[in-house]
Amino acid sequence: MIRSHATGTPLRTLLFSLAATFSLLASSVQAQAEADTINAVASFSILADMVEVVGGDHVTVTSIVGPDSDAHVYSPSVGDARAVAAADIIFVNGLGFEGWISDLVVAAEASAPVIVATQAITPQIVEGEADPHAWNALDNAKLYAASIASGLSVLAPDRAEAFADNAAAFSAKVDALLADASARFSALPEGRRTVVTGHDAFGYFEAQFGLRFLAPLGVNTEAEPSARELAALIRQIRDEEVVGLFVENITNPDLVNQIADETGLEVGGRLYSDALSVRGGPATTYLTMMNHNISALLQALEPSN
Ligand SMILES: [Zn+2]
Image 1: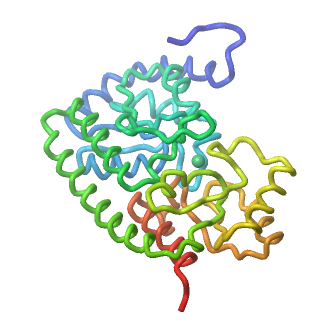
Image 2: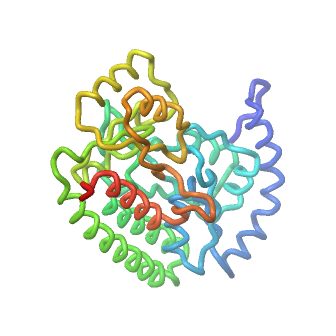
């Protein structure tokens, strides 16, 4: 429920009038969705791809935060409110990833169920807070798919078998990639397991594969490191056996490039941490994103001989 008061933020004021407009459309959109495809909204591009894979032809998916964009610091638009208000079902990552989503759902007066895709995942805790980047462990992706399938099945029980089949096919591909990647990462020598990237998005990935990621930014991208913190990281990189540096698609590459200048290490490429690539890029789906990241890391970490 939106409270009407003089001190409302511009977004809320705008949404107040939008909600009235879209309540008129809601009944016809709902009727069409029931007869046809499910209108799903996902908070960010990686999750949107998983919803598309599990939903198949039965679902159309809108992603709020687009490819190559940072969901940690996103500001929802009027168009996002429109999409959320018209949705049949809304998928979010949870674990504090999209701090803006609750306000958006409330302000848009969305009546659709909100499914937390990480509901079955035990989060890693970093400095007292849940690390939201759970998708970066391949085995967690199967739990995302299961949550998506069960959310869609509650909405459309007649299509539950199709959602379960799609989730199972996705999980089989995840397992194949996981087996291949595990074999190659576990064969790495002890001294070739540490890399640097833009922010702490790979905690689940490093736990899965026995690697170590260092980063100038924490699990959230909001706070810039102080000069002292950056100097300490650069000392640590010089002292430890760091093999490669990677920029990310969602964070400013300046910090990583500065670290490269000061340590003499080369930038080994780009990792897709919190968002897919735009169309034509190397990471337009969850599976191609993980495959790209795994290949880029192995290329830097495997000894060349
Ligand atoms: Zn992140």
